[in-house]
Length: 328
Image (cartoon, rainbow, N blue to C red; front, side, top):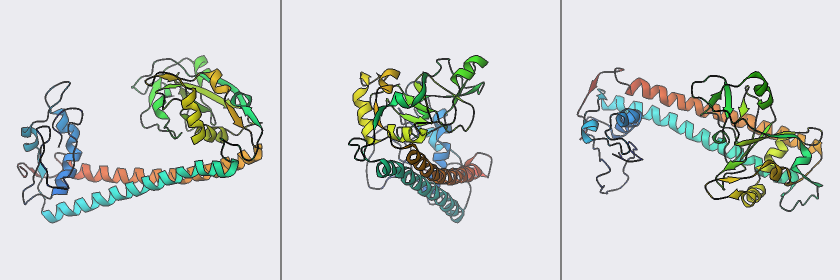
C-alpha cells in the first residue's frame, strides 16, 4: 500500500520477490487471513484509511492506522468463497467493458466502409463546408454551475470523451432563467464541439441523445444541422474520424496547455456530402450498434453494483463480527 503522496492508499499484490522504499507498506497476512480477501477489504476501506491519514498537501497513512484496521472474523473457507464471488463479478464487469469497447470500435470502421476515407474521398462525393450543413452554431452558456443538483444539467468538456461518447457520470447543474434556458437548450441530434481544451483534446465532438433536458457549457459550440442536407450521426462520425482528429490538431491555435478552434474556423472545415439516404442508413446502423453497447454498459453496471453490494455486506464496519491484528 502506498503510504503518502498523490497515490496514497493505492494497492497492489506483489507478483515477485522485491523490496520497497519508505513510501510503501508491505502487508503480510498471517495464516488466519486469505491474502486476496485482505486485498479486497483494504480496497473497500481505502477512502476510510486515507481520511484517517495525517498531513495536508502530503497525506500520510501510518502503519498504526493499517494495523488498527479491523477485519471480519470468518473461516478461511468463507473468506475464499467471498473472494471467488467478488472475482466472478469483477470478471463479468471486465468482459462487458472489453466487449463494449470492441462494439464502439466498429463505428469508425463502418464509417470508412460506407463513405470511404475522408482524407482521400475515394467515392468522389461533393465537398462542402461544415457551415453549409448547419442551421445554427452557437456557444454554450458561461453561467457558473453548482454541485447541489439545483437547476438543469449542464454538459462540460469532461462529459464528452475523446472518442465522442457521452459520459454523464460527473454531472453538474445550472440555474438559469426561462429565456436563457430556451436559448441554450440541447435537442436530440445537437452536436457538441469542444472548442477549448489542450491541443490534443480540442475538437472532441459528442452527439446529444436527448436523454433529459440539458444545456452546454461555454467550452462547447452547439451545432444544429439542417436535416434536409445532413444526418447528425454522419457529421458526428466524420468529426471523430482519424482524418479529422489530425485536421483539428493542426487547426487548433494556442499552446499545448490551452488551444482553441472558434466557430468560424469550425464552419470553414471541408466535408464530403454523401446522399442523405445513405447518411440515414448509416445512422440506423450506428443506432443498432449503440443499443448493443448500452446493453453491455448495463451488464457492466450490474456487475459493478454486485461487487459494491458484496463488498458492502462483507467489509463495512458493523456488518459482521470483527477483530484486529490479523496482519503484520
